[in-house]
Amino acid sequence: MWSLSQPAETKVSALLARQQGAALSYAQIGASATPATPAGFNLDHNRIGLGRGAAAYAAARAAVARWEMFPRPWTRIAPANAPIEAGTVVAMQAHALGLWWLNACRIVYVVDEAAPVRRWGFAYGTLPAHVERGEERFTVEWRDDDSVWYDLRAFSQPRYWAARVAKPLARRLQRKFVRDSQAAMVAAVARETGSA
Image 1 (cartoon, rainbow, N blue to C red):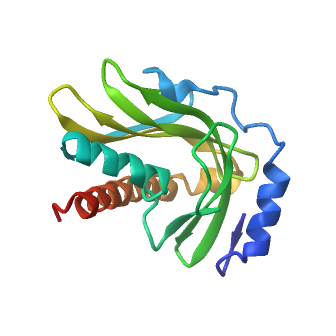
Image 2: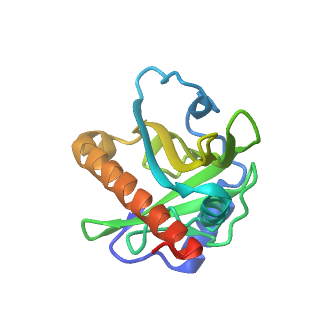
């Protein structure tokens, strides 16, 4: 769903209500947790170091819990305080090329691992009101060497004809999202740990 102006809160709420009971728009549910890429999908897997130690890991977890990996001002999540738990439905808003895009997603699983690597985060999948289809995983890791990482893994493909026609542009926006998301996480951890 797209518009020339930022979607009103009532429009976002109506979209979320309509999508609550909808099935995910792809069959490979949970595949972002595996190393394989589903056939016919583009894979994007990107990582960036955020710092070292417990404080950096705690700051990274807190940033993901607050959805800070969605870079402002051109992306945002609604509701802004959506809980990180399986079944939560959110609207991802993006502003690009003079248009506002409103896309619905549902958290499909939460990651909370203590070994062999401490890892926390979640993956969400696309609902019918999304221009793409696929899944995206956002995790933070605290490794044995004390390094802390932000890991972003997604598989996607265009859902509608307009998205298929504009696939090169969509891929460019996906790459921009990765860069800006990484920068947002680096800044959030630096701010929280006082290393800015």
